[in-house]
Image (cartoon, rainbow, N blue to C red; front, side, top):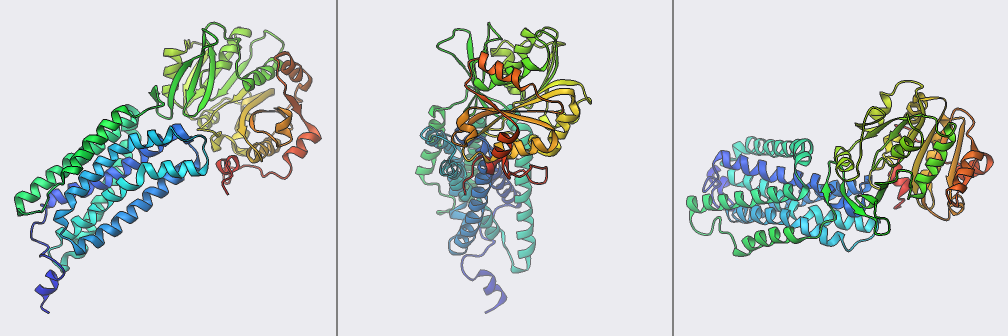
Length: 511
């Protein structure tokens, strides 16, 4: 067989109908970038239904990588058996249409799920990324096949287009993460990405048909119908969002039983309750428990200096401002969208005494002055769990540094049996603070129940009797666990550190 025969064996000559170099680069860049956009936005799509945990991130990334591998493998194999000119445009149109269709598919599927079990997480992650990512990942190897003019150029062509595809993914990652999500809803990002891919596929089809004639670049009518149907379903799909912030799907719900009551919903959680007329009304039990701690920090009515890690509806800062005039509160809230909702819908009025700083809680802790705070309140959540970087020994040492000698740290925790996370966090608190107690319902202490608990820590002896009396006065059937009872509850739980803090796995033990 001659060298020319080798170049043309197994199909038509690679040069026949090859795409112009810039078109091949653009198609590869776009398809690779669209997959990364889908991966990043996919996590935000499923968060309102299953929360944001390490498992949800892992599922999205894992399925996206699986889809990329499947698409590249099958795309390359198919390109060796079929003229790529017949498939590139249809794959782009189908993949783009399904990127748009992911929006209603996830929302309809998510509305049927309840809870954040492993099955629901895996199902929604698969729905969000697998099929469109696989279709679009099949395009680059077909473009490579089409552009190969000589075996002598294989390395250059494959290397160039592979590099361009990687650059597309990098560009999509940074533009989406730093820009698009900050200014556009997820629905707009997906519809825009899918629509651009569909239109590009149509343009490639026209280009190929003009260049080669025949069936190359022909688009089945069904694909165009799919693109239109996907956009239509996206417009009518149910959405749990009133407003999409940088981190959450958020909405404010009026309390039907209390005219001035408002509930701030963040993703799957009733995050905060705010009474617009009465800041001393504390609806949630854990908030009343922390208020009982705050009441015991200093004599009644005296101002305190308080740091709040996590803002939500700022229920406790408003309470302290009302019952302890002159109190100085700094709230560190990572989500500027939540702060905007607080101002626009929950009547938040900040000033010299009540300040809000938009920052990550760990960053804010690191910048706190030494020994200034009488009270530090931890109430930060990413989905269903406390962000791991706020749970470790190193983070708690920053809390300790910020507290005055008799200052108190009160942190809201959520867990369910076997309470692995709460026990580990208590072990970590006990490794940093000489005095630690736990406020919880009795079934929680017996590891028979889950929900909210409040851990309290200090360098100084904690006023247990005063806190217990406050719990009773507020109608809470909670008890204070300390000493031997607390030690038995903690058991042999590991201390969490920056090097090892498996918070999500302790909270949701799938294995």
